[in-house]
Length: 251
Image (cartoon, rainbow, N blue to C red; front, side):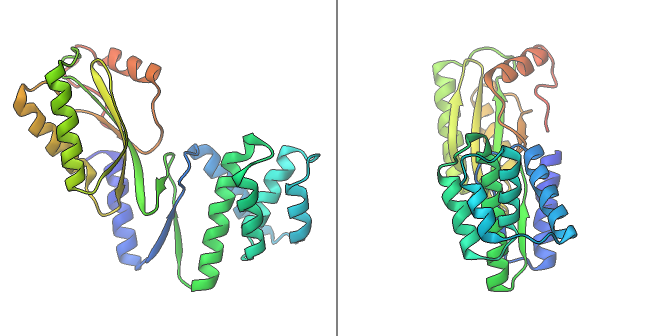
C-alpha cells in the first residue's frame, strides 16, 4: 500500500469515527507549502486574539497602494470572521485579484471564510482536507502517471485499448477524468473521486485488463495528490527507470 492510499484510509477512518458530516476541499491547485503558510498565519492570529476593524481591513484589501504582505494579513484576518460581509469582500477580491500573485492566498482565505461561516451557522464540525491538488465539490483530485513496461512507444491499437479501458473502468466507479494525455510511451490522468472510492483498486484492475492484450503496460505507476508533474519531470523520471524492472516509483 502506498503512502497516498494510507492517507485516504486514515481520512475515511477519521471521518467515520468522528461522525463528521461536512468537509471542505480547496478547488484551486495551491502548493502545500503555501497552504501551510496561510494556516500558520491564521492560527497565530487566533492564538494572539488580535483585535482589528473589519471595515478597515476591507479598505486595505482593495487599496491600490498597500504592499502585498499587508494585503495577505488582511485576507487572513477577514477569513477568521464569521461575517457575511467579510466573506463577500474576499469573494469579490478573489474573482479578480488586484495583485495576481495573491490569487492562491485569496483562494485559501475564501475557503477559510466559508468554513467559519458554515460552522457558525450550522453548529456542525467542519473539516478541511489539505492537498496540493485540492478537489472539486466532495471529490479529491489525484494525478496518475503510467508508462509502457519496456518504455517502447505505444502502437495505435495500444493507445486505443488504454483510452477505452480507463474511461470505461473509471466511469463504472464514478471516477471523473479531468484530463487524459497520451504521449509516446506514457500517459497521465488527472482524476477526481469521492473519499469512499478505492481509485487505486480501479486503476490496478484496469491495468490488469489492459495487459491481457499484450502485457505492455507497467504495473508500477505514480499516484499522487501532491503535484502535477510537468513534461520535463516526467521524461527525467522515465529515463531514470528505463531498463529497470521496478518501473516507476509507486508513491
